Image (cartoon, rainbow, N blue to C red; front, side):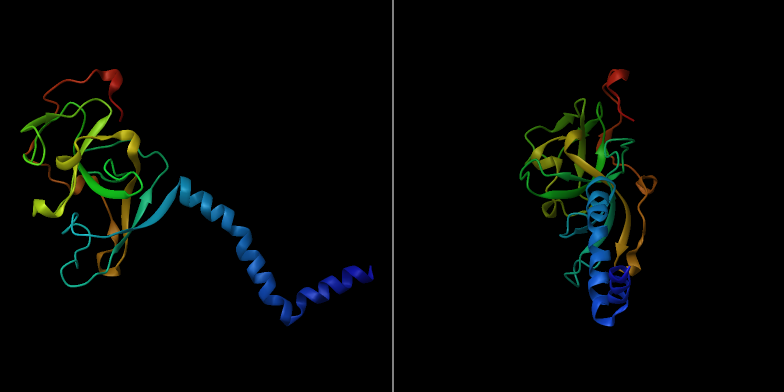
Length: 195
C-alpha cells in the first residue's frame, strides 16, 4: 500500500506533469498515423497547375493551399469534375492533384503536341485528368502522360482548409464540364463501370 501512495503522489508532483502530458500525447500517435494513412489526410498543394481553383494567391505569394483528402475508398464514385490526389505516372514517388475531366469510354480531344494523338478514348480502368490552369504550359497532366490508372488514385479532395479566405468544401458538381470531352461516345461494358 505505501508503494501505491507514493506513485499517486509522484503523479501529482508538478515536476512529473510534463512527462504525463508527453506520454498521453504519444499514446495517440498510432491512432493519428492510422487515420492519416487510411481515412483522411491534410496535404499541401503547390504550383500553378490547379490555379485558379487552388492556390488562388499563386501570383502574389508562395503560400500553398492545405486540403483535406478523403482516402477511405479513393476509386468509389469518381465523376467528371472530381479533384483527386494520385501517384504521378512520370515520377511514382511524387503525389499530384488534378481534376478528372473524362471517365472510361469518353473521347477526349487532347493537347497535341505533347500528346501523340489528337483524340484519345479513355480505356476501362482509367481516367483523364487535367489541371485547371488556362495556361496549358503550366500543368503536367494526362496530355503529357496519358490516361491515369484508377489504381494510382490515393484519394479525393473534400475541402480546402488553408488559407482561411479560401476554406470550404470541394464539390464535383461545381465543375461545368469540358468542351474537349465527348461523354461515353464509346460504350464500356456495364460490368466494368466503377461508380
